[in-house]
Image (cartoon, rainbow, N blue to C red):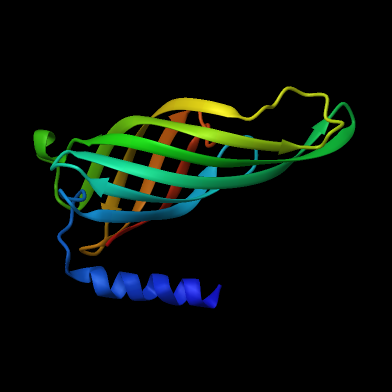
Length: 166
């Protein structure tokens, strides 16, 4: 855990030379954070890659676990997700200041649901398709905070995290 934290701190320090605003063509960005939903608190890590000035392609992994009280019995569940996304960044077309990044897009993923064998409910692994809208604010040239809202996937609400341009 200490080496992961040290690696992240070094990445932040080294990447401070990049410009603000959305990632540019050929540039990558690491996203880390927590989600919010009615089914536990997901954690996620993702990588976005700039395809053009206004379009990015990304991949993400997520995990969450939660306990459910169902008919006076407690059941433990976990959901692991692997997904890909495409986003359109509105900064250029709307002349948004470079400290900000506003985007919208779609994602598709596969979600692995693990539940107790005796659970009577209907949660199953499967494919998920969803849309998202989000924003980032870069407080340095390469580090920012992000918030994203969406539905129909493992987050079913949204997420909040840190974005680091690589």
